[in-house]
Length: 87
Length: 199
Image 1: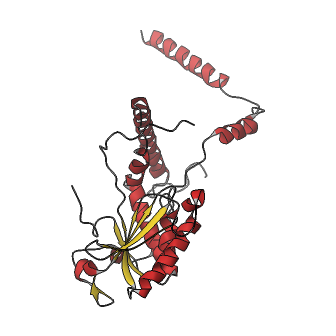
Image 2: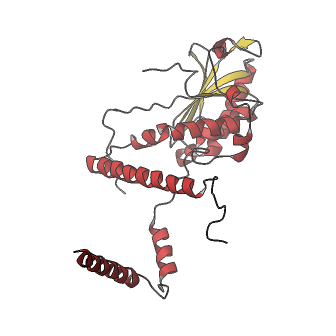
Image 3: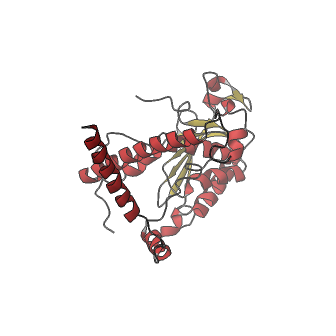
């Protein structure tokens, strides 16, 4: 699908602050993996490289999910005892 | 039966303890720092990406009016300096690894002015630098101002060294930049690209 040109991937500049506008734009493009895809398609990615990359991404996602859960567990705020093991 | 299962359980626990205790070192491994340095040296250099891609500025998060940064359905008819957004002239920047090309078009996309790092007098590898991109943008914006155009929209294409500095150069040259659009061509099912470079 083709998107509207000056509606998609567009950032308006407030008070001539172009640096911030660029940063916002680049961050969104990076998060949506548009820039990654662009870099990846400059040269042909051989099937074994695709498999390796996909497997690596999967492992990373699993690790990140678990780590997020651990961090949330440690940072939880409704403890019965606020400092366990420090009495 | 109960006793037997208890014995089995205990033996399991002991064996588990044994494994655990054998894995504990009482001394630090001697070459740990050296090993680490060696590994870090052999790693490929970490790519920071484009500016702002992987970093988050704190003041950005604090800022409240993020909504005003993004266009909505009223933006095309909003007046900027007396001209609706959709009729503003466009400055199209194309940045590649080896060159930066900047072009002024009217709102319909008809080309009017054109400048590139090569035309600016930079040759060979110097074309692909941010300084070249910036000076190209400054000299083009002087020509644009001669035509009586000051308020423009900017589109950027490609990830080159001139991506950021060309926009900065336009502003330094006196242009009033209303919006920045990314028009990099990205496909998720592209035709087969060229083979990888041999290093």
